[in-house]
Amino acid sequence: MNPDDFESELTAALWREEPPPDFARGILARVERKRRAQVRPWAKVLPWAIAAGIALGAVVPVALHQRAVEREARAQQAKHELLVALNITQSRLRHTRELLLRHKS
Amino acid sequence: MRLDFAEVLKQNQSMVYSIALRFLRSRETAEEVAQDVFLQFYQQMGRMEGEPHATAWLRRTVCHRAIDELRRRRLRMHVAMENAPEPRDGYTPPDLLLHRRLRELVDALPDSARMVVVLRYQEDLDPSDIASLLDMPISTVKSHLHRSLTLLRGRIEKQEVYS
Image 1 (cartoon, each protein chain N blue to C red):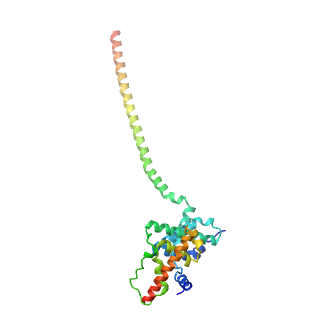
Image 2: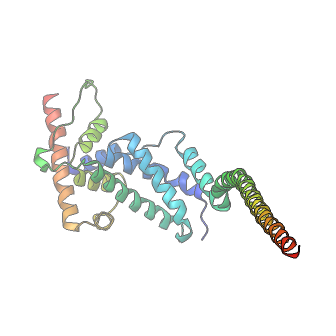
Image 3: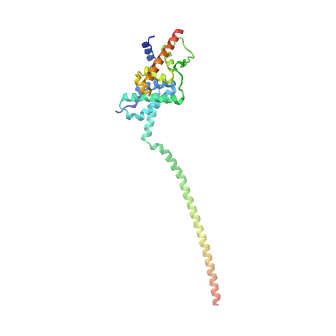
């Protein structure tokens, strides 16, 4: 086989093969998904934002309730201490009155 | 100039896939690489200056991606041309066509030689274009072509002698 004929045969042997039948369809589908993601960039963040909102919705009321309970407890404590102080004052006033009455008589 | 991606894909898919297939010798890997090349092209499409530019870009990109894939998979065979193994036949039908045999022989060439032969005889590129595409000296390209043709012709003739 002369060189020119051999090169012709080699050219004929190395024909281009077609890719699998669904090759183009698969690429176009991936391109379309990319295009949609670029048009709606917030779509990636939305599920996380919803999850964060749900978590906050569960946590915040509990935290608020806890603070209210603590505030009530502090108020009750202050009330108790005031009553104790008033009782002490009342007791001392009574004692002073008795001393004065004794002295007068 | 605004290109239509689907049209570019249709016009160039066999070129991109075939180059990847000849370089990588694996249909599955060739399909993956070819898909990645077209997805990369989609991102770059706005920079193309027309269909010839797009075709040249795709050809160059698939060559480089295939070379990278070969390096990554460590499929480089550091064998001298003379020691390139005969392709394994398994079953060889008596009426094996010349072209099928030639493809098998080309597949068995060392990587760099195979790339040069594919770009010359499948893509009909000049040695200077091949040198530019593969970032290879033109003298190396010509050397690969000369030695590959000598090897391929020798093996075909040897088969003809013994058949």
